[in-house]
Length: 304
Image (tube, rainbow, N blue to C red):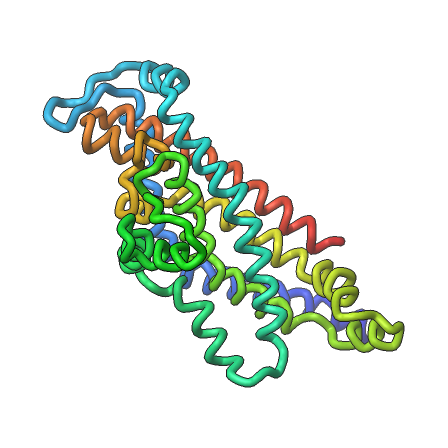
């Protein structure tokens, strides 16, 4: 009887899959059209303009690979890329570690847990412009700046945090760490909810300490979340603009210039729009590589 019913069942399953596929395409159509219109078209336009000499005033003129040749000899552009790499190499690991610590602590039943979660997450949902204005006050080079007031207690300062080339990049990194902890903590908190409590019970039976449970149970179980946070943070790092624009404008002496700010300078201060589009294409290629790594790493981690 089951053999006779099998063809009918297969037909029903195929019809259900077809209906689901049609509804899926229909529901995805608005977002797909939006993406093609507001992301796909600008990417195509940027790619075309990257092969032109264009200054906004005059019509674009085809220049071949001249813009890309300029980029590979543009020391300031690659210095900006280096600054992104430094910010990522220093700021992301520190913010990830602090986010993990906060997530583990705030996942426990402690008084005021909800309030502390909000306080840690608040910098992420605060507009970056507001965050930058707050830190401009904190970094005020006078003795009235909050950071210099704190350092003055121990006999240090006042220090010109944002106007000294030796301090400016480190000061920006500190802001990115402070602002980035909240979202990372939220992702870790969500991942912690999925960790099987029996693993901790087994560790308790084996006499494991808190540190041992953290290193041998918590950290390995959070590996997919860690990879996801790492790659998305790298991508977000290469898209940083408004924070740099308000805090330092890439200065002093281009010591805090990043890729997106360099593109802004090329397009709207030097009026070399064709070259700016070529720089944007290079940035897009960097982001594609990071997205590919994210897919491979996160996808591979699920199979372990």
